[in-house]
Image (cartoon, rainbow over all chains, first blue to last red):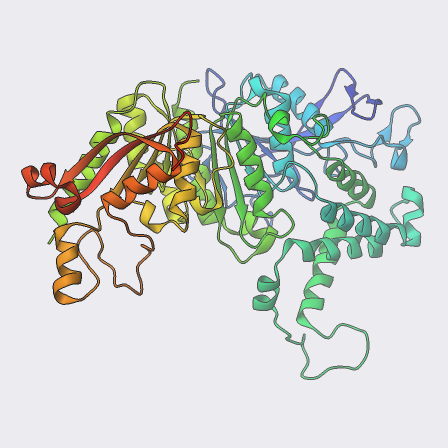
Length: 369
Length: 211
């Protein structure tokens, strides 16, 4: 896989009423598009993901793409069969235009002058890319968590442009609990003096705030069971309490590590914009809360997957979505995978999820529609 | 005793009777669809549009492998996803005895389906009666292989009991086909004594009977 750029020739209209010009979309592809362009699978990434979904850019890269155990030659999403596309979302910080990009109007970074974007805006940008790649109808759009929201938005906004979708560990709207966590995460970044209202530079970046935000969010991706099993009350490199407020417990050390790793690859302003996009996500916003009406235009066959210990996107929300599609007499499959991993299960339960994804895609590729 | 061979035959007969009810393009819902093999057959042979409900994760995954749309769920939670008459046929195959409230489920399936096909095990079969009467022990056979304490079957009925429940709920029995084990003639004469089970085709009554 090799990162590529697609620069939109026309401005991108946004839900907030503003438009973005000079938008760049960073994307990667794997596999080969077949002659009738019927084997394209779009992968939509989660909050902290990027376009690098599988494989390595160079053999010596220490880590492959973020969903490499799912996607690749001979894997569950087999790049010998399918043409896989993944792009960085707008508002992101991994190559696609976002708040740290240069505003062509001023020649300076947007920072907080970047327009507030929505999940639908992300999907609008992806649609342009997919058109550009010559794909009229995607075989499937597949994603988990925030990626799952994009999947659902695709199914609702562009029903004619996809044959099927797989929405994993997601919901048709962001819950008040989710919004609350995002709020606290952004407050943590705001409290870092280096954030400077979103206007910071290379020497002083709000690392402490961003790390705190990530640590908080990371807890919501795990479960009581997985934390207990992984760390228990174990102490980190010591036999007894230190009777101070530095790190004592293994779980504290783990979170510190997660926070530190995150600030190396993510940007605080992007965190603002992307979390805000998820806060605003609500498929029923224009139907007065009526989900059955909100999904009435969906024609693609869907598979919806949740995980039993995921308390961030609980099974009941996925089930509600499946019910709404069924009441529109759409073809839907729903499964709750038993797992102790919490929300993170969508990246960890590869074997179970992988079989389902592989078999669903194979069937969707076979049926005439 | 009802042996394994009879049981397999019995299930095959049930499925044959049920598949004959399906016309091309029909929407069919199978409650407790297992690996989806029967729905796949209805889809392939009868051109039905199918949906299965199944509680077991491994079975759901096998449905997906079979290309059968399936919703993982518990029938005791109701059928909220199905509006009135949204299916042409709702199938409940050898499952009613495992349901917490068979009466509520029956009302639900005749609401969701224009018709319902329910195959039931007959607890009034002479062999069951003999085991209880003669040995004083809870009946066990190939259809009911469990002990009383580990059985998932919590609501047994005889064919007469089932008919009585339908009458009480105002559900019309369109047809009933007793399944014979080894005495076809006797089964015809006294199904509640000789049939191992039966397939009932049900519809809701326009006006529920009041009695």
